[in-house]
Amino acid sequence: MPLTVREKEHWKQRIEKKIDKAVDEIYRKEGKELKKTLRQEAEERAVKRLGLQSYMDKYRTLQDRKSALKEQLSKLSDEAAKPFEAEGNQSRYYQGGHSLIESVVQRERVEAEKEILLESDAGRKVLRLEREREELADTIWLATSPVQIRSLWKDFTALVTEEPTELQKQAMTYDPAESE
Image (tube, rainbow, N blue to C red; front, side, top):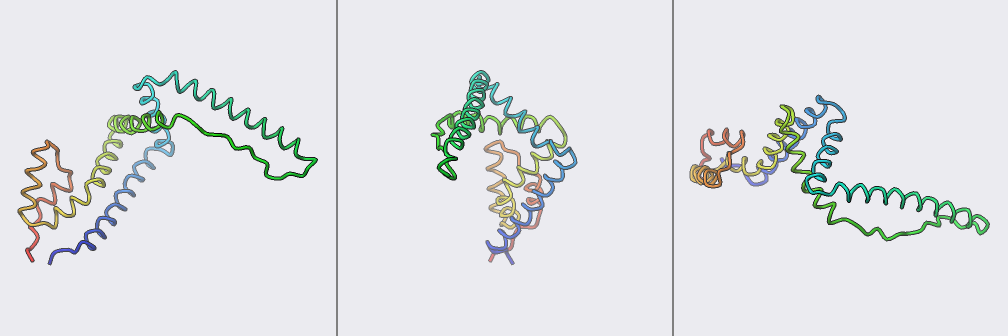
């Protein structure tokens, strides 16, 4: 008897939890600071690749100055307000900025993280597990589909020259789902 959509979703969620646990275990084995180091190195690569190093240095310097000035202003305001017993007197500043640049750097950082992960066995395993997670819904449907869908899937992946995941390869070997 074929699985219902609800059952397929249940198994997808269960397997995702196992994948998350396996990824966390890899990071734990490789060291507590691996994620942080990975993110920092990836951001450095992204900023460098985008030619934004000078901009980011200036931006950070100005942000540090802004924070220092904001702190000084807050202290000054607090001191001036003491005689009047004002509480919670906080100034609000417009936080304009470089959200476009941040989003561009973020996209590039994600790609740089993948490159860095490819440089180690543990990183390659993390990437394989993350790809399995991304493809999990398709994998579950493929494992529980009739032969026609499997054949279509096989033709499609060949057409787009995309290699099926390990779980998808395994799913193709299961007996096809029974027709209702």
